[in-house]
Length: 344
Ligand SMILES: [Zn+2]
Figure 1 (cartoon, rainbow, N blue to C red):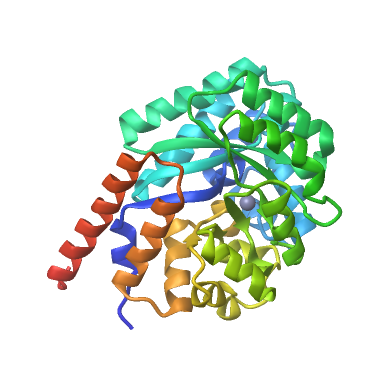
Figure 2: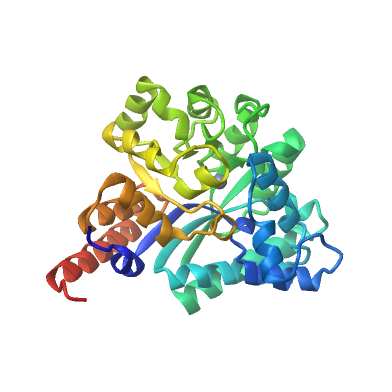
């Protein structure tokens, strides 16, 4: 089969499901760890690689939270955010909705106004200097309970940064039912934010139904177990509710046992709007280009098929209509030029 990696590398892309702290590359993590020597995160590259090898979902949450602990000052936040955008620019990601968990940072003592200024400063610099348009999804860390939901809602609505477009819910699903977060999502939606909770990653399709009915989800983070329920797949397809699929993450966290049997095939066959995303890319040893290559292999796609996935992400994004048309046209132009000159 045709090697799609060079095509994917240059393809203009949008990413809809990627976490702020979870995007910290080993280099950035090592810099932050060196600045905060009391942390338990190792600083040398080999030890970091071991540290980033997951045994199960609970271990992943442990590692994730210890990296969260390295981000302690507004300057840490600014550095992390801008460096994440630099990694995106290298992959030709033009637009990203970055999931930020402000509660985790403000609870650790970062002043809330300083936090908002740091992400906004990085967002403006990323757009001006790197050509990467960033938007924020503020998410509730489910493991921290309803207190974190109330605080995340307050931070989102009272301090609302200019780049904020959506409201999410992450962390573990087992024992953290979606419906209890309804009052917070109601307030965020009433204030004009889009609803994008994680659901159906580590629990069954009922969690996805709960996200749709209680939290009025407009997209679903993962939604992997949706394929167990044909009526749910039909509902997602009919209402163009996109799934944010993150193939390598699902393997790393053991949500899916075998990459070649990833349910993304059934999702596409059912007509669901599938988007490809990287979730916590350096922690899972991947990036968005890697995830497109994995998806292309599982789905048996050629260049036009891969470009179709990239356009799905544009359609499912919260870009304004003119921005969507512009990015979709860039994808079409790039693909047409590529196919016209096959010897690249
Ligand atoms: Zn996620």
